[in-house]
Structure formats: structure tokens, C-alpha cells
Length: 161
Image 1 (spheres, rainbow, N blue to C red):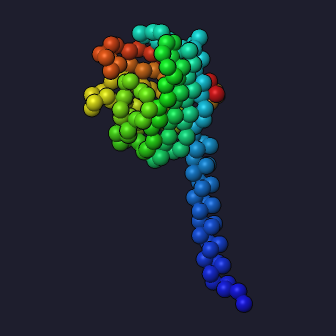
Image 2 (tube, helix red, strand yellow):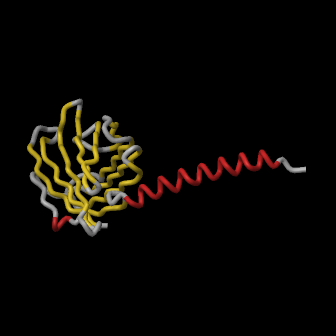
Image 3 (tube, rainbow, N blue to C red):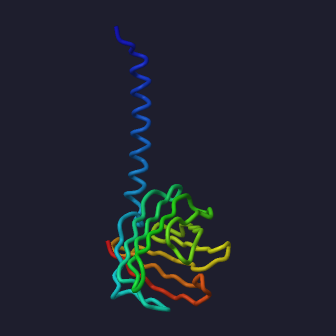
């Protein structure tokens, strides 16, 4: 003899999880920021330089649970890797090797634009504005402020999918 009510409860729970997962995937699929972005060094401008040899940026999740993973091969020195996870509006801890930040805060400006503030030791360092192009193929990140050593920064990094 089967327990039909228990089967329906299990099915309802499974359907609930499936719907929630589909909604999350749908929100990610509709967010033009989400994806893997590779730096186009030739189109980017770094002041002060030099520009990194390469950089990959992976953005996933939603504004309520965003994850950012950055891998950089600098012009000199060892490779760098750092990550940040969490929701918009909060100071989120940066893990890994980011010399300019130990926390990161971001907010959504509109469907194609995010703003972020990096801080080191509680002091603002670099503010970034990230904008996805209308065709969704290019991400331009403008960074201004001071690096952790107090040098002015004015970078325009151009990424492609």
C-alpha cells in the first residue's frame, strides 16, 4: 500500500525547489552582467600603468546573492585571484589577492549598470562603474580613486564575452 499524501508532499516540495531554481536561473539569464568576461588589453587604458597581461572576470548570481571571481596576470609579479560574494548594499569581504580592497560594496543603477566601491582598512579606494553594451557583448568598467598606496587611479577596462 502506498502513502499517496506523503508522495504529494514530496512532489510539492520538489516542484517548489524546481520553481525557485528556475526563477534564479531565469533572473541570471536576464541579467546582462552575468557571464565570463575577458579583458581586451588593447582597448583598455590604465593610469597608472602598466595594464595587466590578462584578466578574467566571472559574474554570477543575482543582486541579492552576487558572486564575482577575478583572475589577473599582472604585467609583473605573481598571478592574482580574488573573490567576493553577497548581496547589494552591504560591505562584502574580499578574499584572495586584491591589494586595493578588503571589502566591496555594489549597487544596481539600472539593467545594464552596476556601481561598486572598494575599501581597504575601511577607507574608500577605487570606485567602479560597470556598463554592459546594448548588444550584451562588451563590459566597460571605469575605475577612479586612489589605490591602496595613495596613487590616483583612472582606468577604463574593456571586457568581452
